[in-house]
Length: 312
Image (cartoon, rainbow, N blue to C red):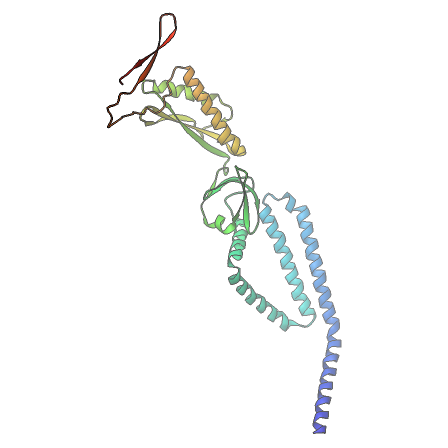
């Protein structure tokens, strides 16, 4: 029994001595591998910083620039780690590490599928998207100007001052209306004139206002015009269409529209056109009570007199 224990103890000591000798032999390679990893990370950081200073600040597409910077850094770090494992003689560990990373990526993908979905959508949008920074867009009920882009969300500043962050998966899957894609946007409004007014004369007056305004776009591709829109209850409605430059969307589509409406109203009134309000008919049922009515008129001297009639 004593001999057996002594034999087992010697075996353990011999094994430890063997592992120690192997460690001493592998230690320089492990140190070299660690050095390769450190140098690889420093080189990746240096190259990324150089890219950011020289290229990213001048890039027209900031999202693509950030994507390339991160991709370059990650690829260089992975290459450094794989080289370090080979230098240390740990090729088997490298293979196992790649397998573990792949499996871990799948597990994390299921656990954080919403985040992963937005990140993948951000990568797709980095290569192909329907808008750029400072474009005016509408996604569902969100309407505003694009302020920033990232891999997870798009930052929209609405015209009432709200900051909204839309997940990139929504940007990728939902309809996006870009109001500044080609730099032009058509504005319209309706004005009603009386049935007794001359329609062509009113259209001519409005057209003169459109033609005289220098902020309105006019060329062979963008026509400004006035058409008959509707025969309403008390008015003939004319619809006015004109094109604006969307470089400043608020100025072009809101402020300028208000200016044109005001000028049209003032000019039509000064030219003698009627702008009647809706006519409402009041009917009273189920009563025999008299309704007093006050009638105001002027005498020959211009003095106003009021007469009251007892019955309507």
